Amino acid sequence: MYIIVGLGNPEPEYARTRHNMGFDVINILAKKNNIELNRSKFNAIYGTGIIENEKVILIKPQTYMNNSGEAVVEWLKFYKENLNNVLVIYDDMDTDIGKIRIRAKGGAGSHNGMKSMVKELNSEDFPRIRIGIGRPLDEFDRINYVIGNIDVEEYIRLQEGANLGAEAVEYWIKNGIDNAMNKFNIK
Image (cartoon, rainbow, N blue to C red; front, top):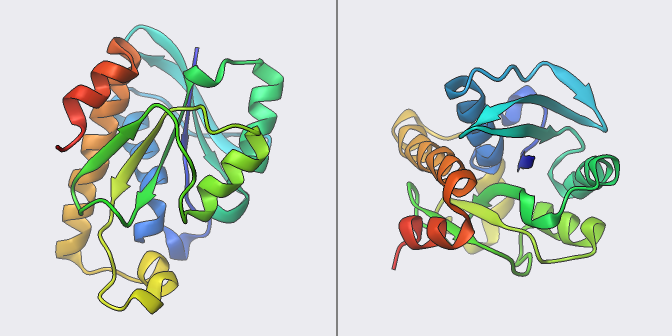
């Protein structure tokens, strides 16, 4: 079984923001694989289904970005799943718009959602996909950049990255993390 977690914020005003790229990837996966995200448990919206002949749980924590780990740790306690079978998807300012980066493990960097994940899981040893959102022109305006409104043209470019992220999730399930990194990481 695989637990696929997309990070984001639950309120409607965050739906079309750079910070909700993890939710966007989960929504794409759900639609593409006929998985309904219509249930709630452990402070998360979720759906279960099959991707690449494997059982998956798609999760969107409802604890807001900065506390994402609080919801996810409850899922892991319940299912006792190995961290290698947990994939976290989130936005990344260090990756260009429309691009993705996959890692088998690593630190949280400056991302508050990932800081919560690392803290609550008490580990950095879980795979993740970073969806590129680019950097703000003004480095001191990071908060408004990640949760602020975006125009239609940029949203289309961000969705290219989200679609690539969804493709990478399916590839990871079928072929493993090393093959996914080799295929999708930009050199």
